[in-house]
Image (cartoon, rainbow, N blue to C red; front, side):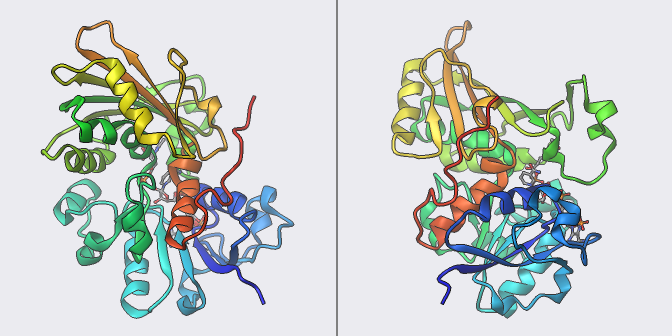
Length: 350
Ligand SMILES: NC(=O)C1=CN([C@@H]2O[C@H](COP(=O)(O)OP(=O)(O)OC[C@H]3O[C@@H](n4cnc5c(N)ncnc54)[C@H](OP(=O)(O)O)[C@@H]3O)[C@@H](O)[C@H]2O)C=CC1
Ligand SMILES: CC(=O)N[C@@H](CCC(=O)OP(=O)(O)O)C(=O)O
């Protein structure tokens, strides 16, 4: 008899879905018994992703055809607005499975904030408020209990891992945070978009959604909670011409009486026993090729030339720690498994 937990993956023909399968097929306690897609439903997985051919994974099917009671866990890699109804239907009408959502639909606790940033009224605000925010290192207790685990966005994962311990300990001024962020194009998903075309994204570095990116809502929410005061965070994302990887540079004001050394020590103390968050040796610049393909987030701290200021830089792979890897980490936490199971890949270099 199999001791594996039965999983469905919604959105298996997308980028996060593909990486969840790449990692998940080697997980000893996970068995994918259903995979869904929309336009690609009815096709073998290998016809969409040749790199996942020959692994014994099921054919892609429509999400409508699922019998939810068959699963212990549903991983959801659907676009926001699509996930909310499917997840609400499962949770309202079935005792199982548990849901690990990689989309944005259950991350925000305030329904008005969701409507403002995502442009649609949430159909299940009561479930939004019950979901655990799936930033693994900071919400383990909630993740263990929750029916819905809402994995953070890729940018918030990197930025919040760097900033939550600092805001909590009040070693920086939470009201003066400026995040300069860069992401590879897979962050935008597999759908056709003009700005991610090779001819337009290649050989070009460009900002987008300046002072208006929807991840600002998540950043404000979580840093306000950590700091115990309402804050508004500065956040500017950029698209860089590579397929995966993300780096955030956080420009911060030190709180009165604190130094860059205090910031480093606070981060080291917070993540000392964490398998996936590393504070680099003094002076080492984080770069995306230190984390590519792994579930790691690497962080370092630099004294600014401007007195009283500090720069904290964090990097991760948007498809691993920024989505699919963190989803598996949350699955391990939720089901009481060793947290590193299936996630011990070393970064791919060069
Ligand atoms: N890419 C990233 O780095 C990150 C993404 N996320 C979030 O994760 C989710 C998935 O992202 P990603 O994998 O990049 O997206 P993709 O666009 O690559 O894939 C989306 C998936 O959803 C399916 N789908 C689309 N519309 C529908 C629908 N109406 N009904 C059912 N299935 C549908 C697609 O099927 P088909 O291909 O057949 O059309 C595909 O399998 C999104 O919410 C995204 O915002 C979060 C963190 C990081
Ligand atoms: C490069 C790029 O386009 N990145 C995406 C973020 C991916 C992500 O985390 O998406 P969700 O919050 O929607 O789940 C963006 O900026 O929209």
